[in-house]
Amino acid sequence: MSDRPLLRVVRGAPDDLELAALTAVVAGLASAPRAEPEPEPRSAWGDRARLHRPELRPGPGAWRASGLPR
Image 1 (tube, helix red, strand yellow):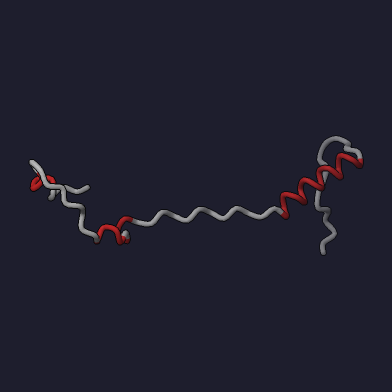
Image 2: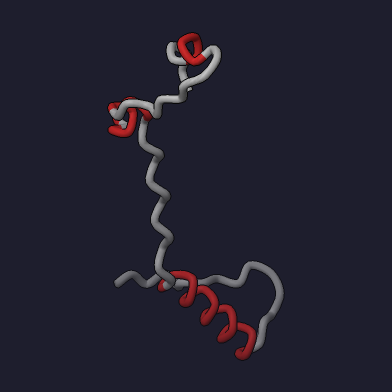
């Protein structure tokens, strides 16, 4: 363990109660669980749903629309 203090007052003269409150806040923040980063969204290249055949929709102009991307 080092001889350096954990906290150091740079300006002002806090009393014991203020130092205790500050120490409690810093200790609470240090012991709080860290939020895990959100996983990156998957690429559309790996989407298995693209392998399924699209629903057939008969009607006027359906042959033209069948070649268009959805």
